[in-house]
Image 1 (cartoon, helix red, strand yellow):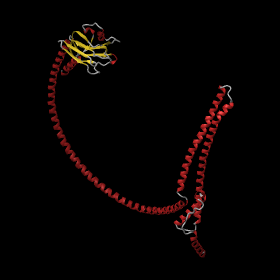
Image 2 (spheres, rainbow, N blue to C red):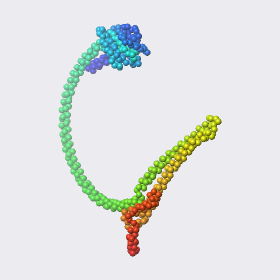
Image 3 (cartoon, rainbow, N blue to C red):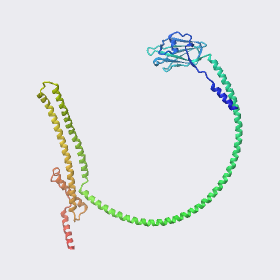
Image 4 (cartoon, rainbow, N blue to C red):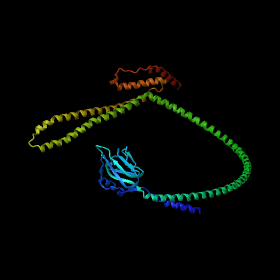
Length: 442
């Protein structure tokens, strides 16, 4: 029953059709003569320029005006436009548009007449294309009153229905409270029984855990005993492996010391600066190669210019008559000399760079030979002599410097000599004595 009443009132509200303001036509204007009245008719491609005077729009009867929309040509602003509103009591009020964005006037009252007056301007004069008046006639108010009465009646019915619903809700709430209290009592009883069951389960679980714990402890002790036995065996094996590893490491250290000693001797013979010398030589070769490209590019460009310029000379003979070959030839001689000079100079420059590249390669090969010879001679010459590392280093350095002196005699001079403090003659008596002892032993 309540739902039926509610749906009925809802349907009445949905069927309510509110009277909205609408666009009024020219018929509401009393005096429809004059071109300015065409603005209300909304004629296409029509515009009217306002002057600095009042234009009156008087209605045939008082009309509720919600808003008046002014449309201008080229979107000209309506700043300083003056509007005078005269209501149904012949009271007048004046407003002026203060912003350039103003295009709509909102009186929202019953008017008998309104007037507009354009401001004085030299440029951007106001040209209106349409005036749209939005509102409704007073006759429409009767329909609005009827709808309002219908709404009031619907409101009373809705209020009555709301009171009935509220009473029903109160009765249902009371019943719901009683049911909730009964449910809470049952829940408390169930919770108490669940607590007792949970307590018993906890005791059983505790006893089971104690039993399991004792079994686990027994198993762990057994596993630990077996683990200790296994660890003892592993430790013995590890000690044996460590001893073998230690022997291998000692052997490896001994081999590394021998290799280090050999590398030190090689370093004394073949200087570490040789690597830097070779790297610098490679950089110089790359630099000379890049520089030698420039004269060859110049030679190529000059050759192309001469080749394609020869076709221009053929064109001269074909386009000009009675031209002397000798005059053309002698006029080209200076250019030929310049071209030949450029080609010769470019060739000589590139030749110099190529010679330097060949020279650097030759020096690299020579120094490599010197290092190999010095190493071989130094190793063979000190066999059987009891020399310390310092004396070996001095003798090897002297040998290397003698080889370099022979190679670089044009640069460092023939009188250069590397002074070695130890002489081989000092070791000659010891060598003879050692040789004699070896003979007697045999």
